[in-house]
Image (cartoon, rainbow, N blue to C red):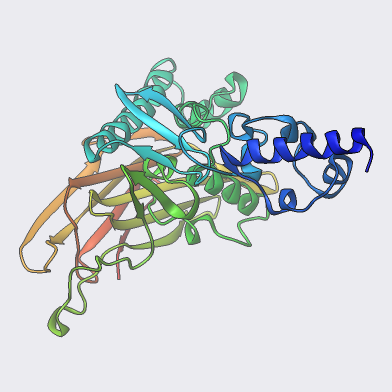
Length: 350
C-alpha cells in the first residue's frame, strides 16, 4: 500500500472518530462507504458529512441521534426557558410551573391577537369580517406559529392537525377527520406537545394518550366507570345546510395539568368546498369532576364569552387544574355551543 493511500485512510479514520465523539451517526455512516457513495445512497444533505457536529445544523440534525448538550436549543418565552431537544423532537420545560406559564401565555396571546384585530372592525358582520380576513391576510393562529418558529425543525401536534384539517376540508369533509388525531381539542396544549403527543419536564417525559390512566392508581371494580383522557365530537348542521359546527368536549390529564374543555369550530360552504368561517358564537362546558381516587367531587360551569358572542371561527371554554389528576363519570362532563340565530348544541363525554 503506497504512502498516499495510507494517509488517506488515516484521515478518514480520524474524521470518523471525531464525529462519534459528539453524535451517534446514522446507520449509513457505519458502512465504509466513500463520500460520493454516501451522497448517492442517502437523503442526508451532502454538506452534513463535513461537519464536526451535524447536530448544530437543523438541516442535518434529523438524520442523527444527537446527544446533549450539542443537540438542543433553548429560548426564553414568557420569562421562562423552553428547550427544543433535536434528538427527541420534544420541547423540555425546567419545571411544572414553567409549563403552566407558557400554556397560559399562549392562551392569552391568542385571545389578544384575535380581539385586537376584531376591534378594528366593530361594525362588520361575521361574513364581512371573513372577507376582510382574505384582504388583510389575517391569520388567527399567528401567535402559535410565532412560538413554533422559535424552534427550527420543531413539529407541533397543532401544526400536524392543521394539515389534516386542510386535507379534510379539501376532500369535502371526507377522509381522515382531524378530531380522530386530536387528543386535547386545545391549540395551546397541541402547540407544546411534539411527536407522540409528548413533552418533557426536567428528565421526565409526559404523554397524552386516549384513556391514559395513572399507573400508580388502582381503580376499584365499583368505580370502573371513572374515566379520564376522554374526548368526543359531534357535527351540527344549520337548518338550510349551509353551515356546520363541530362541537368538541374533552377531559385531559397528564398529572401536572388537567383540563375540561368545550370547543366549537364554525364552517361554511363556499363554492364547492367547506372552509372555516366566522359566526356569532359562544362555547361552554361544565359538569362533575372527581379526584384521583374517584371519590371527592366538585361541579363547575363556564361560558366564553361570559355574555354575548364573539365573531370567531372557533371558540373554547376551559377549566384547568394543576398538579392533579381529574376524572369523571360517563355523561357528567359536557360542552355546549350557541351560534346566534343559526344553531345550538350540547355534547357529553361517554
